[in-house]
Length: 146
Image (tube, rainbow, N blue to C red; front, side, top):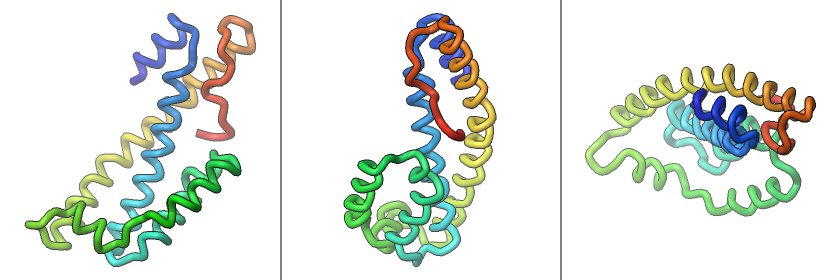
């Protein structure tokens, strides 16, 4: 991913990959937060878990329209039992599923940490090049925090 970001910034001068990668990272942060809540309690109220994950990860980046859409989508979230049944499959018990879920979380979390270290560097570089008028597109990688 680092090579893709470098190539885009230095060769094309556009920030579309940076922006897309930023939003992908944010959505993975949401997914990780939700999976961590589920791994702690498979019986947890799904609507509350989704709301908590959203509030802690995506809400700071959403404007009022996206936040309003989220409130509507929140009503479509399946219950915990239904989602867990789909995720774990027919042949697994809850303990095996929790173990797999924790393994997945333990693999995803360090990758996200690394992304959170790398992405701001490219976004800062991109913004320096924009402010120096060395690039034309100024819409990418604009964020309060990564």
